Length: 148
Image (cartoon, rainbow, N blue to C red; front, side, top):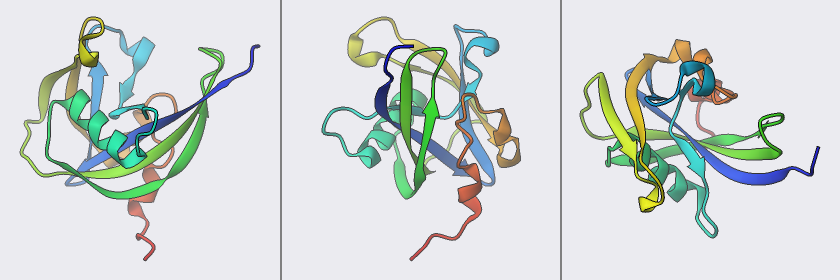
């Protein structure tokens, strides 16, 4: 196995009335990609908080988010899929606009390649165990008091 690349990523836990915002890829089977939360790569020189807000906007098509708090950092090893270790900065975000229970969205990747199509929807927080690839690892922190 080649050396693993370490990538900084963000995960967004967007909560509304004890529900978590998730999505599925429309063009891929659930067996391939599962149910996910908005997430993505931190760009060179980008603050992880800014990356979380950017990724939430890009993947959901919504705009009015704020960071509630950083819940922590978790590592996830993508082996055997690829030689990559993800350092995931996990944020709780608040959404300040109304949404339907389900809606279509897409990410255009800055015009580089075809858009990725998503179906966004809300699930009860207690169903967060269905998240793919360890994305639910820090959900329990939503129930801890913020240190302050």
